Length: 102
Image (tube, rainbow, N blue to C red; front, side):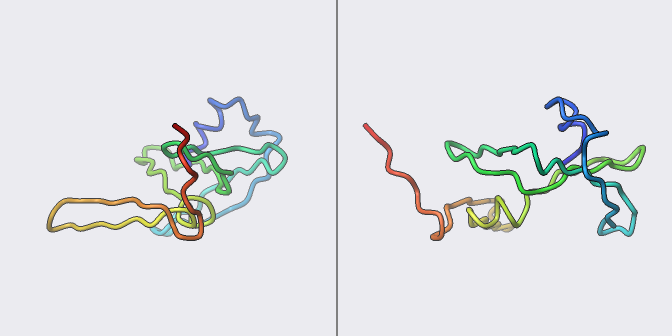
């Protein structure tokens, strides 16, 4: 996630663990992680721990936030059908849906 979201949440960059990472395009970026500050993601009615990192995108770049394999993609199956311009997101069988109360 873009580190500006961490700023909005009031997370102090000086208190973060920082690491270097390399993007798919080969650019080196700094990543930020607050292991002692539990964060959550919400998708529809499902809330779960955010297990990703925040990163500082290079100046002038167009930030793209990616959902992570450790959190989102373990809980959901995402399907793309380009010819029909459709996308489907369904709950993984490893994370059954909770019963909806009346």
